[in-house]
Image (cartoon, rainbow over all chains, first blue to last red; front, side, top):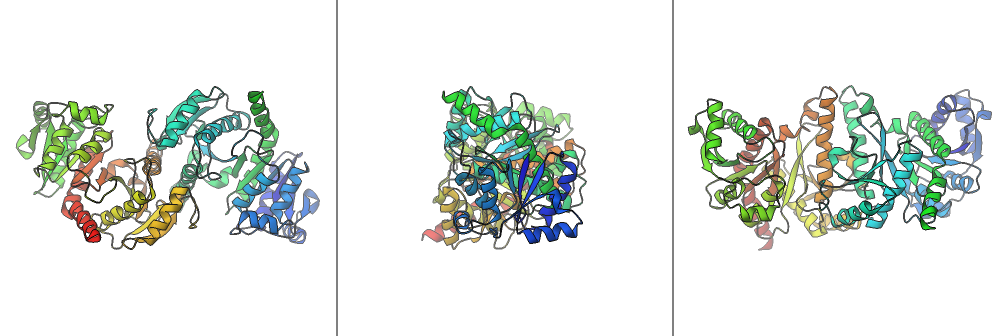
Length: 317
Length: 317
C-alpha cells in the first residue's frame, strides 16, 4: 500500500514530518510505501541530514505550501501545486491509498470534499477523535470539528459512520454508540440532542446505548460517542490539555493518560469520504507523524471507506 | 449570618449532610449559624450519634423529602413541607441568608425561580461551576446546566453575571471573560457562538478577551468562561471524572488536580436570583457539604445578589 504524507504540513514541518516518516519506515510492515510530498530538494536535504537513502521513499514534488492561517478554499484554488492539493490528486487518481497531513485542517477538509468527495448518501463527513478508555481500549468521538452546527439527521448518521469505523478499523464487535448529553434520561438535553436521541433509538443499524454524560467519556459505556463538532472539539482539546498539564506539573502518567497525549494517537480521520484521509495535530512531533501513518495503514487495511459505501448502499437498495 | 442547609438532600443524606454541618461548625466563623432543615427527629438522632449538642444548630422541621428522580415542579407543588420548599421559604422570608442543598437539582432551580425569583433584568439565571486554574487561582464557567439551549443575548448576560461573581465573590479585579469556542478566531464556531462573540465584544461592562478553546479551560486566559448549559455541563462533568480516574488509578494528584475533586469545591451557585443558593453534588460527602457552606458564607459576605441587582439597575437607569 502507498500512504501519501504531506512533508510540508504542520508547525514543525518539514523536519518533524520527515523524521516521523523515517521512524515509521522502520516500524511499519515492509509493504507500506510512504510517499513524501513537498519541495523535492528540501525533502532530499532532510533525508541526507539523517543519512537516509531517498530510495526508501517515494518523493513527489510540490512547489507550494498552504500555510496554517490561509483560507482553505482560496488557498486550494490559488495553490494547485501545494502539497495538500497534490496529495489529494494522488488519492483521487488511486496513486495513493491514504493521505495524511498535519497542515491546515480546513484545507484538508475542503480538499477531501472537492477531490475524492463525500460517499454517496453521507450528509456530512465528520472528523473523528480517538478516545482512550480506562480499560485500555480505544473508542472514538465524532464529530470533533468539521461541522460546528449539526442537524439531528446528521448526528444520527454520525452514529452509523462511527459504528462502522469502530467495527472495521478498531475491531470492536457491535460497538456501543452513545449520545453525549447533559443527563442520562431520554428527555434530557438540548432540542438537538432530544431530537437526535429519538433518531438514534430508532436506528436499527447501530447498537445505541443511550445518553452519556461528560463523566462517561473515558469509561466503557460507549465505544462511539456522537456529538456535534463544537462539543466534540471542546472535549477533545480539553482531554489533550489534561495530559499536557500532568506532564508540565511532573505528574507521572500511566498507560491510560499516556493515550491522552495526541502524539500517541497520531491524527484524526475524516470519516465519510471516498478515501482514507487523516488530519494530524498542528504541532505534530515525529512520533505523532509515525502514529498517524500507522493509523492510515489500519484504515487502508480495513478498507473502511468501501465498507461504509457498501453499508450505505445496502441500506438504500 | 444564617445559612440554611437541606439535611435531607443528596444520595448520602441525612448522614453525610449532618456530618458536613458538624465539620463546618468547627471551621467557619462563629457568627455563621447553620439551620438544618429536615425531619427533626432524624436530625436530632444523627447529632446525638456524634455527641453533638443540637443547640449548636438551628433545626427547622420539614416532614417531606423531594427525591432525586422526582419531577421538580410537580414535587414542589405536591410537597410544600419538603426540605427544599421549606428552605426557599426561609430564604424568601429573610430568615436565612443562603440556602444550600445537595438534593434534586431541578427542584432547587425551580424553587429558586418561583420563590426568590430572578433578579429584574436577568433573562435566565445560570448555574456556575468553579474551575481550578493551573496557577492556583479559581475561575468559573457558566452556565453548567440550567439552560441547555441559550440565545446569544443570554450568553452575553452570562458574561456580565459571571464577571460580577468573579469580582465580588472570588475577589478577581477586572475578570477576564472568554467565550468557549472551537477556535480562537472571531469568525469561528457555531451560529450561536459567532453571534455571541459580537455581543460580548461590544459589551462595555465586561473585560472580554475573546474565544478560548477546550485546551484553555485551566490556564490563565480567562477567569470567566461563557458557555451554554449543555457545553458547560459536559466540561464540568468531564473535569470531575479526570480527578476520579486519577484517584482510581492511584496517580498522586497535586494542588491543582485536587481542586478538580468536586468535594474541594462544594457546590454550584445559582447566579442571577434574588438570594444566595448553592446546589451541591448528588453524591456530596461531608467534606463537600462543609465546602458548600463555606461557599455560601462567601456569597453572603460578598452580598453578591445585591451587587448584581445594583449593577443591572445602574445600567438600565
